[in-house]
Length: 344
View (tube, rainbow, N blue to C red):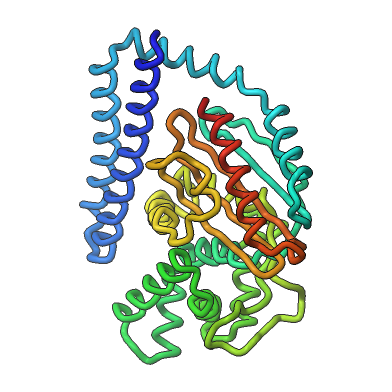
């Protein structure tokens, strides 16, 4: 098998995965509209069509590549994954962190979504910065009916207006990382608009979903809000908790399939692409969420590689001596290293 054929084959498979992802997002959006219109029967048919469309896509792939070639590809993929030395990858990441002049404490999590293999380096709780918005996003989708009801009660308005505002706040919270959108969405978890009550509601939901090392306790700033806290700690999470949430979204298992696709669509539109996305080749789809302060620099992402889809989560704290700009550069280097290992 020539190198050019392998390159074209990898490109074909990557485009196929992206087509499936885009198709799922579009169908999920239609499903949500139809649910809002009360057309339950058509929703069921659309879901069936989603499955039929994916089956047709797979059939098309078999026709183009041939069943014999497909079996060979599966065997080649299995051999390729066996050739990945995850211990070496872990060692290379640690060497890169230790050799860099950036100070601070670093955590890294990588998961090969094709093979299920993962590595975790120094997983520990850190100040979450804007990564906490991922968990608030998840809770919003799970409790959407309550949020709409609470908004109507607090603002004396109708459900259509409430739904529009909440959709806007989710978009600006994830895509542009707007702190006030986060503050408002946490408040909407309370029927009285109490931030601290909203925090406790969100934390209960987070714990119910086994994210034991993540907590929501304070407002985020700069924003229009005054500082509020439950007095129980500060917002925190880990690379492994973030990785588990991203994997649930990727698999369509975060809240529901349709909600997972909505969340993925928001992450794919991320405005800040100077960290993990900057370390992969041009044209590679990345769904990511960043977080940063003067002392921290984080980025967590789903990367749709040419050959391998994977999750990469990087968190750092105590980098104030050199500034987060240098920490960002190290995240780019780690991202490039992981991509090259998993997509040789």
